[in-house]
Length: 535
Ligand code: GLA
Image (cartoon, rainbow, N blue to C red; front, side, top):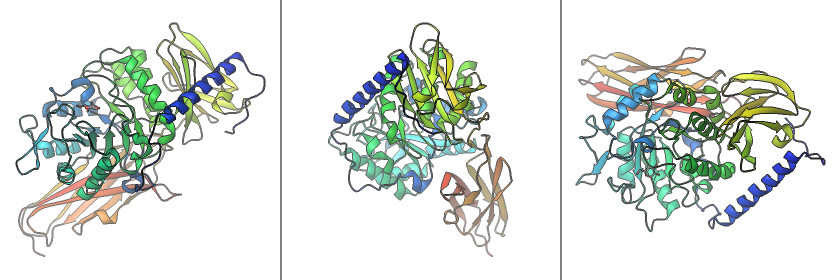
């Protein structure tokens, strides 16, 4: 799709649009002027950290308890019930994977300085909870703080204990760690999070590092070299009830940071409020669409055990999720906004098309026209339009398309020269944990499998196992064809000593032209050897 200059003769809508663009640009300039530390701190790697570990190359998807539950109700029972609901509702099949406790008192610091599980709340231990989550084919998310205490004051922060704490998180088998910024007075934010990143790498277990400084320190400028996502704003709500006005302020602040996002480095406008008390169906749909349009991490924050059909439908709309998870990783942004209607674009997609969104804050149902030229396209382009909520394709349309929108609702569209709208790969695993047990002193061959299914409609390039992730006792072969792939793990116990053996296997899904991973997948192999085995 090529770009053409705006013609000299403009419709009133176009004039209004260009005024609005000017207003947005001015706001951008003002915002930039108020960032005193615009320069990127020295000493950080130029490339995104995700290029090394292959994690979060598309925005992470999952669930965290804080928005709905706050601190008190969080315990093992709740997290297990939510994990089950995540699977049963179809959310796992739509790509949601990271789940675990947020602030609710999970651990304390023992006399020896090490973190200890709060066994009253988490009787299986935080490691045990990780295993339960991995066995369901989900990934394990935990929470901590970069200062001396977490935000409620109830848990110890990592300050001064960065390396030990990240080792504990690795021992508990966390795959994602949200690191808050409370009780951090006097700490240098870049140095602190960089140190935590180092500590995570030293702990030897790749994790999605989610920085949570609510925009303090302008993390969008530097955090991609350290972690994978960073909060851009204050909390979206207090526990238990959605706040629509606050959510919109956050969306309109976050969209201005579009230029900083890309594969493996995401602006995080906070966990979603879809399905929480206080929002209408249209507002739920709009919030979800805005988050998808901004390539935001999709971390649900509602009670998954008690969802209306409509909430499930919104959270699992694969056509909307496909925009969020698009491998190009572009963050869409506002093209113009007249206070009543905003047009969002700037999100090219992997199939050559693009996503477009009209968000309507007026009082009465209205028809809105989108002109190709407002999107940087040629008026003569003939485009098919896919409505991602009604799931209808119309066209080809020349020059423009009209959409009907209701109050607080959106028209969320994909535009393409082709009439098919492929869904990029969406990966779902049957488990992330292979547990094997040898029975006796004789050599044995043990096998276990992990099956990964692509729920998208586009093919995945081939998988490759990272040989460096395999200890001598483990062999892995990728079997199967088509949309499901099985990693067959074979262990020959000959020569192994009694005890527990562990490997973290990395499988990369290689993009054929660049040779870079399109997504990396890690899973654990645990082997328990009952007696010394001689050759
Ligand atoms: C901060 C974070 C929230 C949540 C709470 C927990 O406010 O921004 O997302 O984690 O702390 O206390």
